[in-house]
Amino acid sequence: MPLLTIITITYNAEQFLERTLFSVLKAASLVPGVADSIEYILVDGASQDGTLQIAERYSNLFARIVSEPDAGLYDAMNKGLSLATGDYLWFLNAGDEVHDGQVLSRLLHAIQNPADVYYSDALFVDESGQEIGLRSEVTPHALPQNVHWRDFALGMKISHQAFIVRRAIAPLYDATNLSADIDWEIECLKKSGKTVFLPFVLCRYLTGGLSVQHRRRSLLDRFKVLRKHFGLVPTVVNHIKIAARGLRFYPKLK
Image: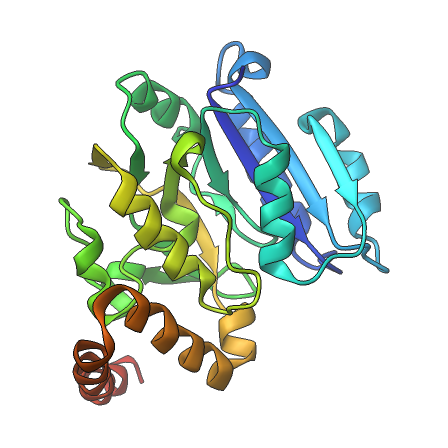
């Protein structure tokens, strides 16, 4: 079985998909025996644009391409989970990129000393590919080198695209919750016997996405997730802290 399964979810993603595929191709080309080490799966939600035509141009990258209607992002991610055979999972969605050509070789080397979770920082980029900055620097979420699930009390501590987990401990996503990625990371960390910080940036993360497009519902769903793990009263108190932190932090970005 491969060491690593990379899963890319798409729906009408022709604008950004090629940057993702090219970054994987570039990094994979530098890994000896890559066919035995990495499995790449694309799960598409029956796109109506040129997404699949772009994917076909990179067909040699993929172990599997699936295109069919789904019930949304996290339903598609659950499909990816069910198809994966690698020891570890890495979700890298359309528009996101492997940070540089050395990442896959460094990651596969790190995995030789097994842990349950590996994580790092993510470099934020905009739609044009312009670098915005490291997530730990341009958001309030400083990145600890010894993370614990309780560090998520004030929100998502690690970018989902910079979070790699052993498949054996990975639960399914709650496909009804727009903040299911936070819940999933917390659940993985709760099960993790060993969590390792990687001293290199894993990905270039395209800002935006589902939670930004549906901001109000995403915030309500985040509250549900944090209440589940931390209790009602602490979550209410922590959301007051989150709001105050936002008022202090975000004006500095302007």
